[in-house]
Image (cartoon, rainbow, N blue to C red; front, side, top):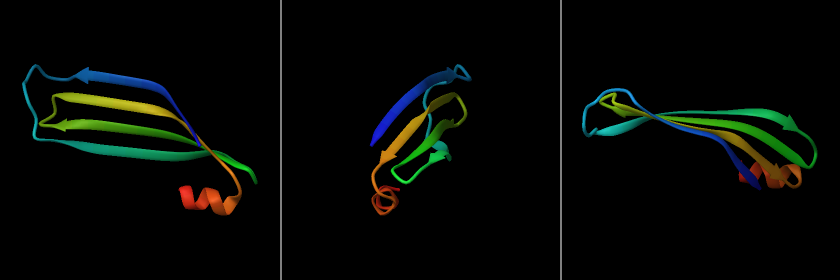
Length: 74
């Protein structure tokens, strides 16, 4: 398995201190699927609650192996 992080960003949305929790939005999209590998694009967005900070992480993950091995990893 190979995981690449292509982008990380942090934004301060308000000038307030502290937060209770993060709301998390996640997406996973298949880019390529062959007999020996699957390439997935992922994106995680963490938004603080109350809304004063946002963290975004994006990248690509490549899974190698036979289809049954890849299915176990997923």
